[in-house]
Image (cartoon, rainbow, N blue to C red; front, side, top):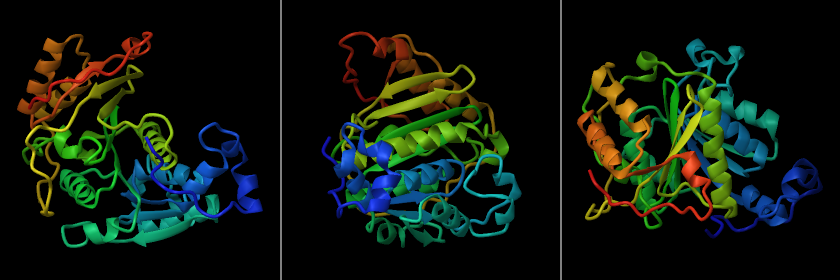
Amino acid sequence: MEPLVPPGPPLSPEALARYGRHLVLPGVGPDGQRRLANARVLVVGAGGLGSPALLYLAAAGVGTLGIVDDDVVDVSNLHRQVIHGEADVGRLKVDSAADRIAEINPLVTVRRHAVRLDSTNATGILRDYDLVLDGTDNFPTRYLVSDACEMLGLPEVWGSLFRFDGQVSVFWAGHGPTYRDLFPAPPPPGSVPSCAEGGVLGVLCAAIGSMMATEAVKLVCGLGEPLLGRLVVFDALRTVWREIVFRPGPGRPPVTALVDDETSCGVSGARSARALAVLTASAPDDTAADDTAADVAAAGGAIGYLTPHPPCARRAPGWRPSSPTFTT
């Protein structure tokens, strides 16, 4: 894939010293580092996933980082939201995160958006960036960010967490599927627990958030193969990474307007637990994979689809992702 961002001005002596280990990397080098310095990346949510993503993007030398979060730091955040500290409790997360980024890399410009995204402000904020990372924990914002990115033609790196499992993918309308292609409809209200109700393993944020940052760097520099049309699912208890291939849904109309959906996460129940179990379970063949999609849809939302590829299969010589049929 072509680099997302053109190279910026020549690197300063300070930047050459700071990014020396990047400059010797094949595919990065001075041009790649100049692309990073010229990039404008928006991170929606300075929480569990946004924290490691922001830290590593700042350290990598992304020139402009935007942060969207209207929340304040709470002591219950500190076990996983590592960009914040004890002294930050009660402060706006955008302020706490900006101060930490300045300590890590003073060459980075931080834009603070201490607002809640909605249909009236989303495109106005997102349009000033080259790339968006969504680390939010609620369905209305996930759909809103995906729809705004689709309308603006922006790539989106998405991650999510639940208990001991995490997911990462890249969405980009016109180049591949979007969040609505993977999950065409949100689950019914009350069918999926919130982070507070279901819990999350704090260290899991590091694994998923750093992968989101990796995908962002790849897109900016044009490195490797992004997770476009691929969902990576991490089971921390078994230390297993699985890949699910999906593609745009046939006949899905393009997004032309933003709508505020008040559907929210809510009470935990067997349906949500079943959905997670089905999505992260091993599916050894196409029949089992079809059953997986059906079970997830029945458990609280449609899922567009999906061919699992265990890591052992992906290591086989000549392996290539298949082109699955999209089902809901």
